[in-house]
Length: 112
Image 1 (cartoon, one colour):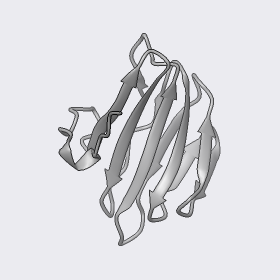
Image 2: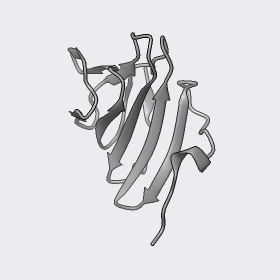
Image 3: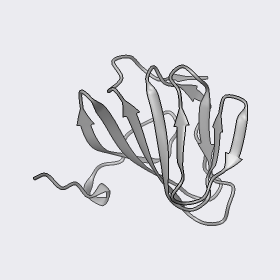
Image 4: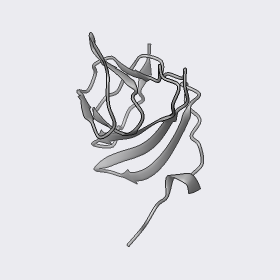
């Protein structure tokens, strides 16, 4: 059994400049733990694979295509491949989100 605690993983360098830590990396999927401090957001981008976001804590705003909704904890949000999406934290509380890309991307995410 392998157990990974996100707190023990290094923050990945991304164009978004937010706290993203990879906690699972396999050919079938990649899983990241993201923390958005109040006022932080991702740049709009497209991924070459399907993505889903699971809100662990807080109320981040999630945009997928033209839809933009503030989501509660324990919500799962789907984002199909090649669709513009982004997340932001417009609240005064921390937001923590699990990001799952499946299958593991073989090409780069396109930041817009």
